[in-house]
Image (tube, rainbow, N blue to C red; front, side, top):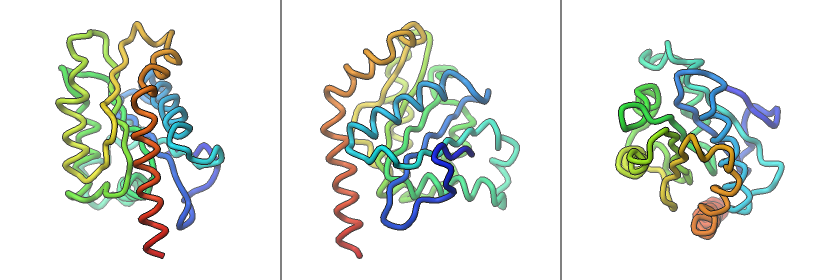
Length: 193
């Protein structure tokens, strides 16, 4: 797990952004795109620029995902569940997300991501798989309690060179929903204090 801001945990009442990378290869294009999406989504949601961002590379803990006593995976799950905003990303394998990502998300109970605004992201080489993010990944995230206020984002390999323009187009519709979702969670947290 890498914390880009150099802190281990977000203090109570503060925001954290988490990127979960379900690519079996570390330091992948999936991670690069997911980090860009997280930065742009955080800006659109109105999160402060100093908000810590944590990267969870599932390839680094692949051997522990089925060890239900793993303190490392439990800590990663805790990081995700305590986030304000998350990007959950996977390459498209056999028209869906990776088994690696599914194994990690199995750590969460039905309300495990309650209060977390999540952007589902998938990368793929063929446009006919574009619905995989909506048909497969989004329902799984909703099942474990995530708030998914926008359509999932599917990025084709041939769109990577125009990623900023592609994200601009997506954010035209997604930005208000992201801001409303993050704002609603912040208001609930403030009211519960």
